Image (cartoon, rainbow over all chains, first blue to last red; front, side, top):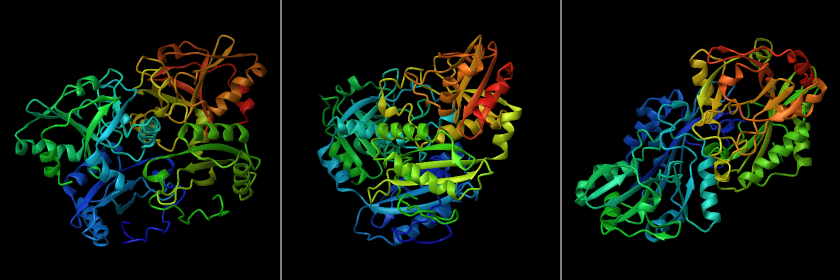
Amino acid sequence: MLGRGVIPAGNPFLKADDLGLTRGDGIFTTMHVRGGNPWLLEDHLLRLQASAASMGLDLPDPTVLAELAGQACAQWDPQLEGALKMVCTRGSESAGVPTVFGTITPVPPSSKAARDNGLSLKTLSYGYPSGARQDAPWLLGGTKTLSYAINMASQRHAQAQGFDDALWVSADGFALEGPTSTLIWHEADELVTVPAAGTGILPGITAGYALSHAGDLGLTPAERMITPAELAEVSGAWLVSSVRGIAPIRGVDGVPVKESLKHKALRDLLGF
Amino acid sequence: MLGRGVIPAGNPFLKADDLGLTRGDGIFTTMHVRGGNPWLLEDHLLRLQASAASMGLDLPDPTVLAELAGQACAQWDPQLEGALKMVCTRGSESAGVPTVFGTITPVPPSSKAARDNGLSLKTLSYGYPSGARQDAPWLLGGTKTLSYAINMASQRHAQAQGFDDALWVSADGFALEGPTSTLIWHEADELVTVPAAGTGILPGITAGYALSHAGDLGLTPAERMITPAELAEVSGAWLVSSVRGIAPIRGVDGVPVKESLKHKALRDLLGF
């Protein structure tokens, strides 16, 4: 915890009136820890900074956060894959000072399995038309807040129906993102994702890395909208995120999705 | 805290991996404490139970929660107005047992002032069309979750523009609710609110009490949709909630709203 160093996992340290808890009023990011270091730390800290700006939160300097990340990773066996979560809340209601901390945990076996086995997805309406959050900053589009109740409920709902994960669809019929991941797909000679600008989806760090290295796979990066039905026609599609890494989409609502011939190369590129 | 009795306010007791904190994955309700007792406790516990069901959360028995509320109130000077918040999270990720606790705090002076001075409101789009959450239980309509980041951002946005509070408007143009309150209005001989069923707004406990006692004011209770523009034409309108109680709406986007001739009687009825 910022200002307090390493706290053993079992020790409680948050007060009952921390606004991160009582209002989900805070932000976070989660990084993949490989070889003892957080992968793409700078990109994560940049996005955290953008989330803080969107929420009017006073985030410590990136160098201070990088130091905190280093403290957490120093406790970690570099042979193990880890998930480093960094959290900044608006703090205790009585104190008015942000609460900043990081936690590091093993990557769950289910996340690793999804890289090999892929995912069956259930489309779920996200309620918003795709442009609803464009001129409405108070709806916190593109902001990674702690308010993930709907994200979690969407995953529970999909899983209760026998699917692995959810794929959110806008009120006007476009695939947006997974509740904790970014949609990317391979179509002709392009590696494509949904534009974050305008739609309010979270700009994915892993997706950003994949697209900016698409050339290494002989592909051109692109951004556009796609419907769930159109996903059945593309050469392959994935949900990507920091901890699960890359998981090929096997099907959407029971309709098969092809496995891209670039799958292995893309997985190698991302190092999962 | 359930199972641990009274914990002094300054003592931290939550772990870094409590899902209420990291995912806003939990529910709450806030009650007005008057004469040393929570007002409308049973209604609040019923709504808490409904929220728990919507989230698939295992809530303790109402009698246990009522006991916990009693424990908190026993610490409180019965001469003071209090706000009793009861929280249930999905618990620590490692433990898998819900975290249940209550806090009791004074009613803020700004809340009391709003009862006398009223509120100037800024309409803000809520993004969803009014029916978007009807057949989408994963969007958690009507559920009082801890994921209030958008609620807080909406209030900050309205206040930054010089207004007292926000009034959320659906994508199809209807007034829905305030970020932490329910809209009611007086029109002809009716006391009216927005239907919770279908719209996904939170069913307000204070609004429910007002409507079920509308007869005492010579009014008939009703539910229907209204546009912000139509609010300028009604006999009076209020935002009601458990702690601020009842606050007359003075204007919406700068357009004046009348003060109802029933205002004093309604405020007396609610006891604020």
